[in-house]
Length: 369
Image 1 (cartoon, helix red, strand yellow):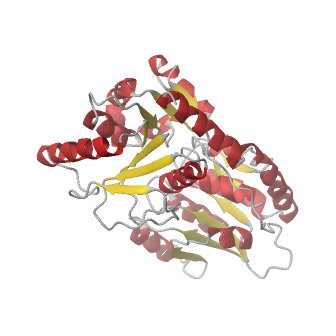
Image 2 (tube, rainbow, N blue to C red):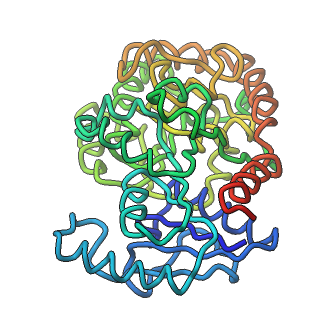
Image 3 (cartoon, rainbow, N blue to C red):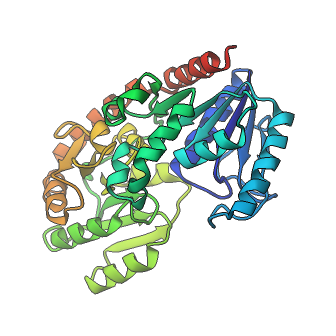
């Protein structure tokens, strides 16, 4: 089976979409499929994640994916993509994110290639983004998809009824850990509250800094570590300085060896406004590190079971509620240890072989092979 994966950009991108797409492509190669990747990147783009050498990477090499294209460039891209599709001759196309799906489906119009729309975020994102005004049109465009994949079954009811028969739920794979955290922190001179994610509006690290400021005096042996890079770095650094937390909060940038961070930390928090399938929470739980997030955050509440493998703060984007949830776990090492063990168990249903079997079956169904 010839599988074509389409993503907006892969060049040095360390996000969840790129990581999941890379893992899926690598596994499909191992299973004997012919896999190609098409992106809007410039020629010579480099991947952050490891690729199977059998994957053929095609780049449009026209304009920048960071700049909204004019109509002239869009038509040029369409003709080039159609030429690429004639050469690749995929049995099935998997387009990640609705914007990429819409472009791919329109560019490939009339060519007969079946396209799957792989949604990577919860419908709740429209409550937080300007794109919410286009929600109806986005859903209408998904009528053109052969199938639509979502990551959590709880999202199905948020889609209009006319799409639900097309929807297939496939969560992300969670690879079993080979090393584990010691969240109790017995004997540790300093304890670490960890957050990993892009420094930006969605991940919302600012509210975590505010919550930590409310706790810092009561927990003098705890530090906050924000691993990630993004457009909000300057704003977050200023916030840390204004709150007098420079000695207690570190922002080291993107860290490739996140496993070392999980295993050296004592509690994890993702204060995101919305998610799809929050890989970072799944990974922390699989490494025995309990997690905290907002009950009002789609995706987060699907993985964190309050009082079992972590804690859910009331609402969304509420520093006081987040501080209350964090306080309970920061104050009790025995509770963190118990929740850490429960976290490992809670991720076992997402074993990679099972998840990749679901993808393989879907791709075969849609391709007709």
